Length: 124
Image (cartoon, rainbow, N blue to C red; front, side):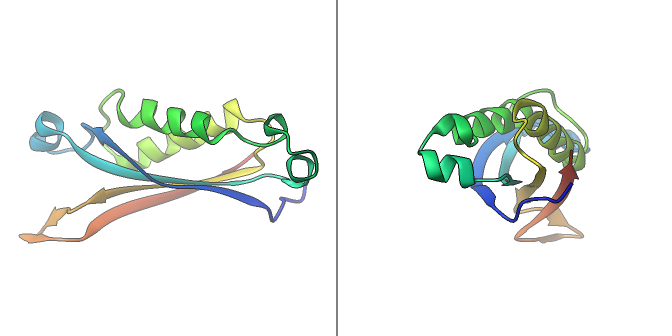
C-alpha cells in the first residue's frame, strides 16, 4: 500500500506529566511537548469540506493529553509509542503517524539542555 503524501500536523501540544526515571520527575512533574504528524489522503475532505472525511484534531489532542497526563511511565519512548498506537486505533484513515515527545530543559551532566526528544513513526 502506498502512503499518501498528504499530512495533518498537530504541533506543540504542551501537557504536564510525571514521566521519567528520576524520583524528582515522578514527584514534581514537568511539561511535555507533543507533536503529531499523520499521513492521510486529504482529497475526500478537501473536495467535500466534510470533517468526517478527515481527522478531527481535537480527538488527536485528547489522545495525546490522556497519555501524557495519565499513568506515569519511565520513558518518553513509551509515551510516544502509546500516543501513536491510539492515533492509529482511533483514526482508521491515518496511514502513518509520526509522534514527537519533547522534554524541555533537561539537566544532563550538570548542564541544562534546551531539551531532549524522541520521535516514533508507525504505519498500519
